[in-house]
Length: 168
Image (cartoon, rainbow, N blue to C red; front, side):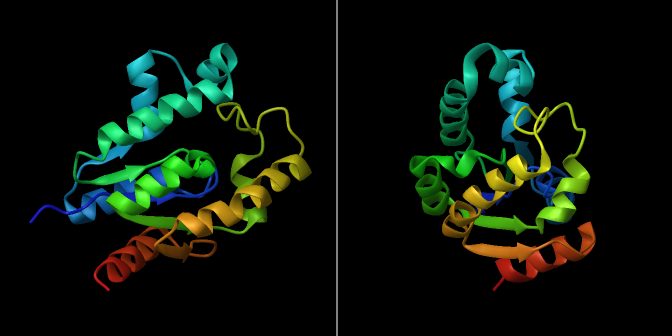
């Protein structure tokens, strides 16, 4: 039986890529990272794409890719802003299980502070990034079919909970 895609959503630094890799290994399913696939397809880093084309163009690339990869069964780790368009939120809910990896902001900030690879964090103050987080939070919650608080959990504990909740 073909498993429908499992989308991991959450703010930057929530652990989507790390948890996605571990979940894929446990379930013996391929893992597709939307940011990595965009970088490969366009031959540029996400930071460079933002710099050259802007966030709006990046979001269009992200939506097109999202529709391409949901043809595949597996774990799909997404960029933190994938939930910004209604089209993406509806598409993920319609085609798969959407798991929101929720984490408190102070833990996220510890992981993000000084990360030059994240264009929406680099050169911003903590309160600016926290405002971005608070603005996106309702969209993550609206998009999710399952919400998991990862704040004090190990990768293994998070993966165990995802599997348990997917098996309902």
